[in-house]
Amino acid sequence: MSEALRKIQEVHLSILEKKQISLFIKREDLLHPIISGNKYRKLKYNLVEAKEKGYKTLLTFGGAFSNHIAATACAGKEDGFKTIGIIRGEELRNSFLKNPTLKLAHEHGMQFKFIARSVYRGKGHKDFKKDLINEFGRFYLLPEGGTNHLAIKGCEEILGQEELNFDVVCCPVGTGGTISGLINSSGEKQTILGFSALKGDFLKEDICKFVLKKNWDLITDYHFGGYAKVNDVLVQFLNDFKLNTGILLDPIYTGKMIYGILDKIEKDHFKPGTQILAIHTGGLQGIAGMNLILEKKNKPLITV
Image (tube, rainbow, N blue to C red; front, side, top):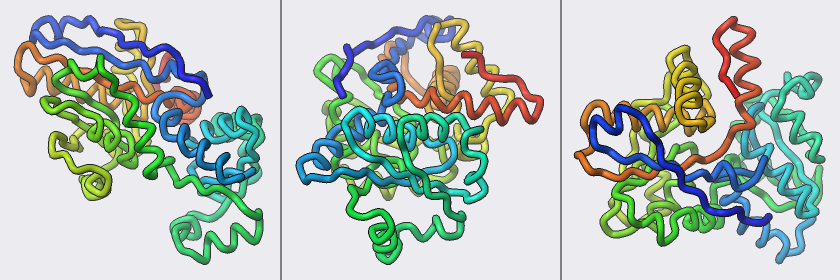
């Protein structure tokens, strides 16, 4: 994988001018057509490690619309690895080609094993891994969502010297890997804000395992009902934002974060003159799957 040109784009909206706030988006979604955003960063050093240790196969876990599954399949194909995805939901076994994410991963050579949700919950048990080794042979294990110490090392590279000029850096949070990398590489006077895509604040404990700095907080008010949940308000926001800025946001992570940032700006959470950098973590491949769900419910679709 080769890194594309770093791109930071300023957002021009009336609310920003009114509140005297500057908002910029770091377009990590432009790093790669499929292996974009934080998935690119998380996989970078894991692939180096897998090669150095002589692994030929990558194995990982994920759900039906997992950005990580799609990115692992594509990265594996580009770097000459066989890829295996352990997929949550055995009901998908005979219909996965109708799922845009799994179809994409399949087209990039990923082999699937579909398992029941009750079995999937036990994937961290040592006997579970032993059974997978017996079935598939030796493999390099990537955790669900891709977060481990090497993934965090990759995410630390999101912030370079140019990004240290911003007062606040914001990112979406799923497993805590991306925000951990940002915290580790942040400047002394910066604040890092994570916008959780999940209900609850249990992720704070996970993040604390990887960071020592205290210049961060986790915002848990903008999950829109929980992971992968959307409503008409969010869809309308995504479409309006695309129309007004030209920037496409995904509905699971970055879209909710940008909605949250602008809501906090509206409520005067940031003092005038604050310069905010929001990290676009990619995940745009997931829009097709979300639109399938919305279409079945006769709901408005996300414009691409």
